[in-house]
Length: 188
Image 1 (cartoon, rainbow, N blue to C red):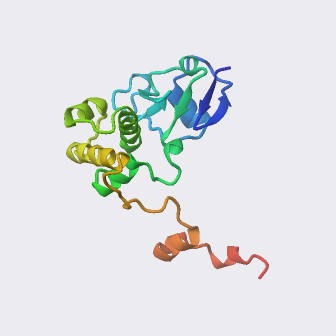
Image 2 (cartoon, rainbow, N blue to C red):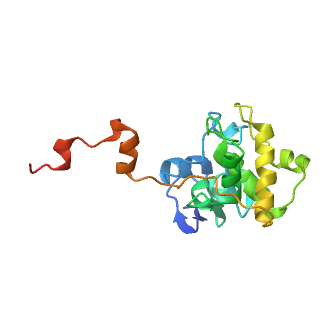
Image 3 (cartoon, one colour):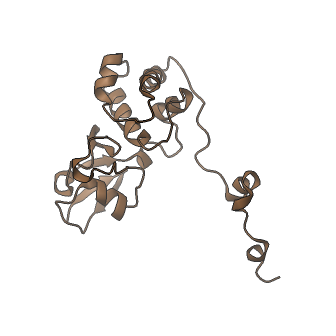
């Protein structure tokens, strides 16, 4: 049974060791922020990028056996409150459209900035080969540059929204989310 550490927690999978890490993360560990680009084990898009021992790797291309004993970080484990500089900069630079590719891009950007807090545009483009069909590549590069400045404490960002919203607060803005009165007080 493959064992590894995922988002700081030791995990043991009772699954085929040849299964791609992507499917174990999504289906067994319920870490669905790591996306399946539809190509399965031959994915080229990068939406499934995670950090493996600090390196950005596509989880569709690494098996559970290859992940044995390693430290895996998914988008859920990068920053629970969305305060990582790359997450903040992606919001501030409006570099998110549909959001499907965003987790993989954030993870690739985080790995790059961990190695080099002041990358050139060329280094950013090489480190983030992820496909983004929404056409925000120029803003992605700007976001990574900005995140680098934040990492170096040359700039600060307070653009990202709070990571969670209370259901009652959400229901105030979206009436369809209100709990029916009959379910609020079942004894009445």
